[in-house]
Length: 245
Image (cartoon, rainbow, N blue to C red; front, side, top):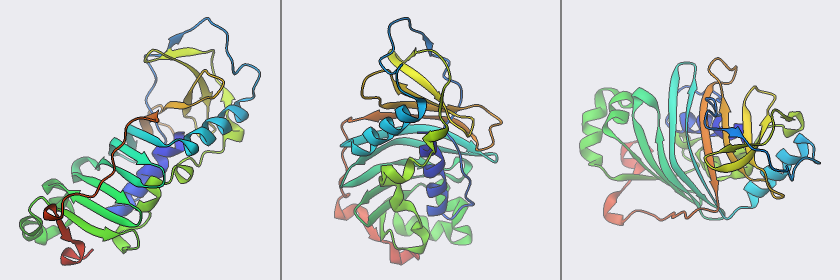
């Protein structure tokens, strides 16, 4: 799961025209505490557990991702990015001092609603005119637009989960995280994946400490949670071609 942060971070930066940077999910899981009951995953290798958790995430009807990622001094946030398999995704993406934007992706159609801070940081001398024209509405464009390079992959769980789990190792004994029994798996990039200690493991969290080669932060993931992905009302939409999308 660590690659969710890296993949999402790169895609987000690519979509908003900023410099790209890979980032693993991160900060330490300080709430984890030891658990003494039997481990149903004890007989499986870390690689097998990671592969099963990945397959379960890809097959899930819905996922919800939250987190904060810091890479090369730039912090990005993922706020309730809900992914609905076969439909699309919706959530809010923050790019630090450069603002944030709401995103709705349905098939190949993109609805993006940047805040004023985003336009001020990215539209230069045209910022005021763009803000006045858009007036809080969503821009409608497609994943083929040059400004949206890679954004479609945010809804593709199998593309976000790109870690090579053959290099996973069981880092510690079974612990609890937010009241959930989890097994920590150490990933080759230095991050740690936490999967449910169940016969069908599910990703719960990925963390990576400050100073890690691929960045730091923390990503949480909830499987099969309620997710709504719907186009905004027509009155709240403007054709992106009016501002170069």
